[in-house]
Length: 436
Image (cartoon, rainbow, N blue to C red; front, side, top):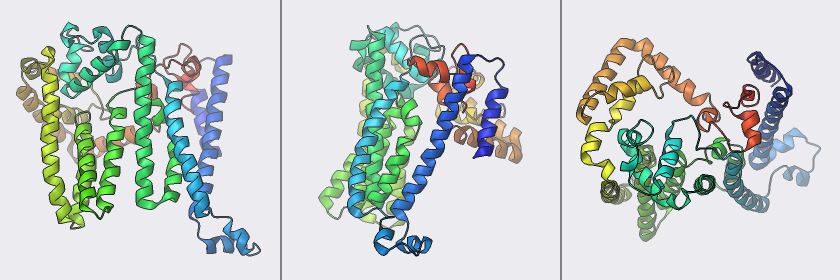
């Protein structure tokens, strides 16, 4: 711990070119958070001992302790029930309230990433057609390039149009919706843990969830990452309920709700289907053929129905015509080719490859070009290069405990957080506080 403390502070100090009182305050704040994180993890460790340590282990630790006293090391079932209820409502309130402290200042952001583009574009439209937007990379061109966000854009435009006149009010309303969805998703998670492993594990989940920073920094922005969280969590929960149910009518109900949620979530973010795939694999491995035969046709019907509904909604927007989509839509292969470009140091977004894909006139031409680019990149990298690229992607994915929130959230409305933690602040204080 001391070594890590010295290392982090050493990096923060070394990259600071000049010092004033604000820099010192930022450094102190960062260290306070580091100390708080240390005690938080100690608390989780001690809580796990209270929840799960076997009685004989407690008696071995101190043979002089009486049986009554040794039992006090462990939480009783009655205490577990009480603390589960307390932690359940605590995590519900905290994950809803704290995102408001991290509310993102959207309008004048220099960032052109998805959330900012959708927010600003729909603010300009006031519920009107997307055809009124200029066909630039950060306005109409964005929605034509990325068709997966056309449905989201239409919903965003219609639902929040009453607040478009007052940008600050819209920021508050959007944050409230996002925070609510995050809170509901986290609560579905604790119910899933309780259904699988009981209230003791669920208490541990709740305490861990309270300290999970992305719930707060990402809970303040309404994009597919936060919108789909309850679809994933409740989809998983209802699949668990269905599998554990011993009555056919309840199985049908839970499978229907779970499949409906995953299908709807898929329209915002395709990876939501991972939950459904996991359920199908589980049923197959455990030879639950009747449930499998029930789930597959249910999924097929709901998927077709949901996809038709989304396509019909998109068709109501003249700017998203079939001709425009054919000309501008980027295929899924585009992202695969981008991810495996040798020049891509993170495996993430790369503007040059986006521009390369856009240079082809039709969807099929883009798809073929991206496919060939991917094949050429794999040949160019060879086995060693492939391993290196996997390492890059893993490093980028796993070394950001806050999911790189400094980049994505960019500029917070809260003046205190903006001054001492945001990377965009004028005095660059984030080199101390945010890093630590």
